[in-house]
Amino acid sequence: MENRGLLTKRLVLMRYAALVGALAGVLLTIGMPIALRATVAPGSQNALLLLWLWAFILLPAHRLSRFLGWAWEVNTDKSLFPPLAATILAVCVNSAIGYALGATLRSIANKYKRRRTDSSL
Image 1 (cartoon, rainbow, N blue to C red):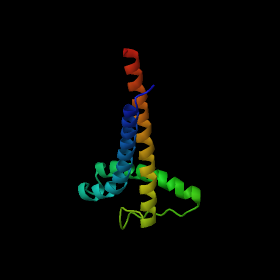
Image 2: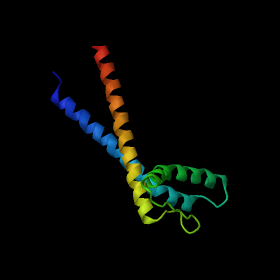
Image 3: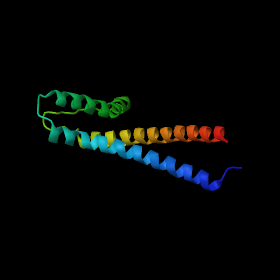
């Protein structure tokens, strides 16, 4: 029979990893345009690299909005932030992806750790 305290500890760690992943998704979505505006000179190669990364971060929300039939318009001439509705959608989608990745990685780590512990006994 499995130790209940150990099982509870595993679930808490899994939730913690999932929440860290969700927080990372939010911070990347909100922080990337701020970092672009603050650190990169226009026309530099770093700007191009960060713009590609920013496009990659917005891609899941863009695909979801196209799937739902919503118009996706990001005009970077005025601001690097998309309109408020698109930003909220991007934050929600990226935090959900981060949550799922965090939970999956922690679950894999738990299984690997459990196998190592079981094989050493």
